[in-house]
Length: 214
Image (cartoon, rainbow, N blue to C red; front, side, top):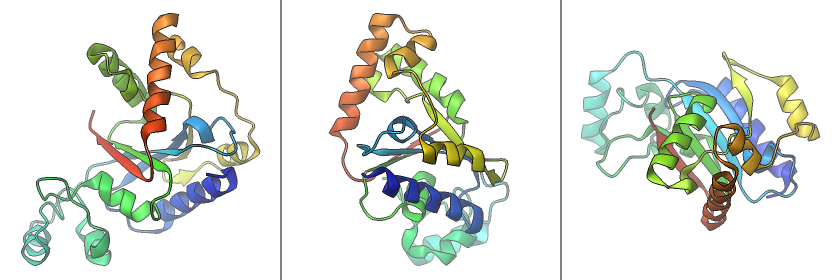
């Protein structure tokens, strides 16, 4: 993906988060990996969204939507107002429940672009550490979250300065092995883990999405 196209996609995501109803409340939007490093072109655009839980459920909407569309969880895990406005974008998990991460992907992304969307209830920095610990415990290094990220939206507003630095390619980050070493991995383990992350990313294609709960 050309860098200009990736930046346009990021800005479209930010516009949507600011101006449109969301399937779940969005607290933060980050980008990480290739686009944060200023590469052009980039292999994949990696976006991280921190979501909040719905504060109030809507049992009536849940019952109605399940009866009409066969989808569970509307009004409980995904906004009823959003689902009624965008019924074609409602996505479910294997058990037929509305999946917040898939609904966000359907709303924020376009087609089958080379974009990966991470959705979690925890902030990016907290999840980086949690995922690193889990990956080490299970020796599943490919599941590590690249820590080289840029926060573009938080506290209900976008960061114009961070977006401009991203656009200008002014942000400087260490290599991935160096970043992982800074988080506590031994140098040889960091190099092995970084290689696993790169190999896993290279195996992905099109739009991918992952939902996580910490």
